[in-house]
Length: 306
Ligand SMILES: [Zn+2]
Image (cartoon, rainbow, N blue to C red; front, side, top):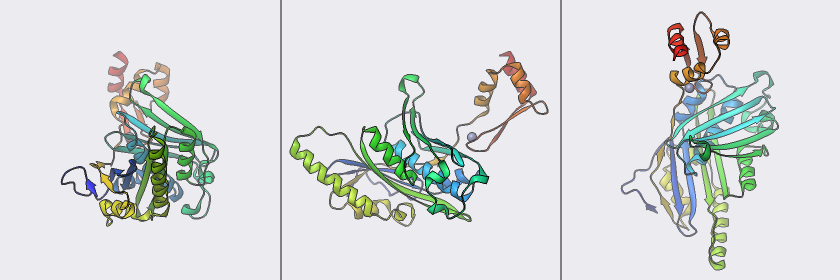
């Protein structure tokens, strides 16, 4: 195995590790998340079913965002008519992650979280993946209907529909209750090829081989801190050779701020402001991180004059 970053030390936790299979030039990402997702999920009082779903969604967000070249925000969102009517996660290019779910607690099904099909939680609806680089011109969004028993299957459905690239993911989540949330996932991606026919056939074989390796792999290894990601990749893809690149650290980080709240308030009418006021101030709770941001009478006066 080649390590591209000289003297690179294998990352342990909360990382996104890009790699390349030598022979067929297939791209891959290995994601392992621990404290980052545990912090995000525990800021809310979610039933274990929802914690698990959010853990998966955050992991897929980290994985998919790392497969794209962008500067800005990548968003993974599901909307449906189930007990979890909304699931929103986003990631910046620097690895800041956040996410939340809108939950109707009374409608959460009984039974083991790990065995509940995603359709029982999300209902019928859609999955939207968005890349937002700040400029309206640079916004890209792909939408497919929710189709699958797991979020992993829903993402595969997205891949099949998008036709932009061939890719496959495998994901595993552990935790809930008293044990911290952990997750791991791998994505393999085949870039569109325009090679000679012979090479194409060779690449097809390599792709099929990689798909078998991924299907046969034990994804619980992806999240175990004890398993070195370098060893793991080497064991899986020894035949083709693996090159790893510098890993990126993932972290729980919300982008809410008082100034953003003030920006929204500044656009409201006087009546709307009055409606929002409680004891002379407006308190806004961030849906992502549950932080309360208070804008008092003095702030408001300055804001409304500006
Ligand atoms: Zn926040």
